[in-house]
Length: 322
Image (cartoon, rainbow, N blue to C red; front, side):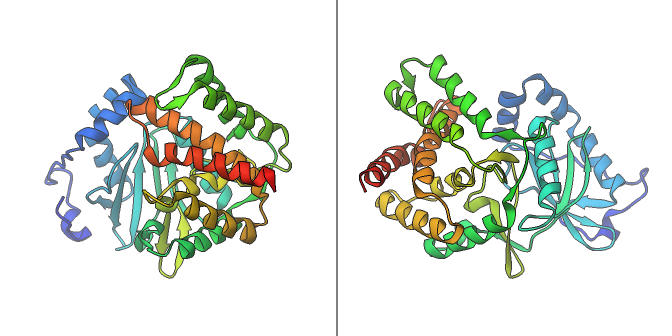
């Protein structure tokens, strides 16, 4: 979409050019797979929703970022300020994200500016330059940065109906275990059983529950000026050690995975005063869950997640023998 100044864009309704946005076919396919009939209606109304947002917030919505499960794009407002708009099919996940953004309140997290729960509209500050932590070539530096974000985000909480918990994740893993008695894709039934048992043990030995990001990895941490901030929180209640796992599972090399994971874990353990045994236990069990999720979603599996399973198991065995 051509980028124009707000003055060029803002015209009377009668003269204003009708804006049609072509959505990527893979994005459309994903929406239909996840949301079924709701996606059909949402896609049918999409151009009207764009038009409504532009008029309501006096903004020009620009070309979107790479899309996965939601429409996310930068936008230029009447006063010249830039924001980001997210359009989602209203769901429990969307409501949880909004409430998590409110709880974190800009502390280590992007700031929320406005929201429409009913229509699935979320507006927040635009992070500039907005490069992700994944662009850093020094993995140890990236891990230290992620640790500082985690320090800011985590806070003790009581249970809440607004957010999922690690007990819900345990229930999900048990569902997979019972639905696939012979295993899922490359994950054997023995590995599934072991992961389910460890997940249950970790939950039953949980101490103080914390408010967690729920999906904190290198692509969900962006540079804003000279500071790094998290985006896209799931909103999850559970063990602090559980919240580091998604970071550990992402941006792994094809070789020397064990060495990289050990370095990351040692940094996080020291910086955040974590229990290494719990990190490794969560790492193994969640790597199994994440691999199963990826297989259920597409019929293929995430190789980074799958390759991590045996590495975590090996590291856990070493830790138990010490």
